[in-house]
Amino acid sequence: MENIKKYILENHKNHCTVKVSSNSAEGEILNKIAEKVMCGGILLKLENSDMADGDFLEICKKVKQLCAEFDALLIIAKRPDLAHLCHADGIFLGEHDINIHDAQEILGKDAIIGVKYPQEEADYCEQPDT
Image (cartoon, rainbow, N blue to C red; front, top):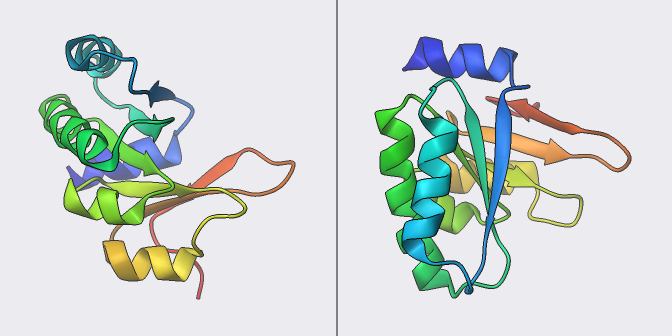
């Protein structure tokens, strides 16, 4: 998995974002994600729009299983606590979210940290600069 992780990080153009909401049926979400990760070698970012934390965590755990099956990496947007609980590969942080070092403390030194800087595209790194 380490070689796959490195390849995906170096070539993270093969990524997609799936936004889930309380209106989405779990089966529909999982089918949509399965379609995206079946080819493997993908970085999947999962975002929560308005789903309750407990429900979103359950979805995250199931998505993590799917990603593991197909050698895809799972990134959870904005929530390092939920990323940690579902054993996601990393977190995506926006400009006004928790800082990189605090996220790394929650997730561990091997976590992927994605950062969106103002006016720029997302950048992913395995270990943030200290």
